[in-house]
Image (cartoon, rainbow, N blue to C red; front, side):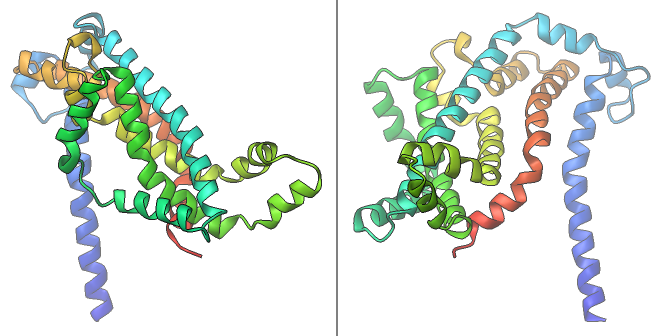
Length: 276
């Protein structure tokens, strides 16, 4: 009886969670395909026809494609640098964990997970201002920097649990250098964790609002999509159809990335978070 009650409670909690996620998504999608008149008549109802004029108007106006290009550039460059830097740092730490220097570095990265960005926000902005990096390139540097904390923690755990040193030793015996061993043996075996890092960081960078707001506020030509949507809503406060159409257009690219890599996420997160 007790187990049955627990199952019912868990089911209700899951149902509430589904509703809280699905209902806003429903509103976003149906409103994006309505005319302004339909939305005024029945905000929650389904569209009578799938009207595509909202998407056309969003794309043709307000330099939307410029903001898409900024978001794509920042996201892709950040991910590429993250995939170069984070696995290398993690691999070096894992294979030298018995040394105090590497253990200290790992501890500092791990502690970085627990420091809220708001605590260091003002010093970071001040430092980036002094370095003349309040631009897209400075933003990319910050994304790579903040990705190190969680990325190193997950990669180190994954390497410990799934990659015995004997694999690299066998490659060395066959005459492979350290660089060749890493590129041909180590990095391919990190595929599940790499997929996890790609999707988690892609979601974060693509949808991030706070860092672009701090770093890219000099001119609207540097805006990313979240900044465009924020200012779009303030400028066109009653144009819900256009606002929601822009949300749908923003969701599609990152949804494609998620669908490509999602099958690796659970395995990567589970193996990376458990210490061997």
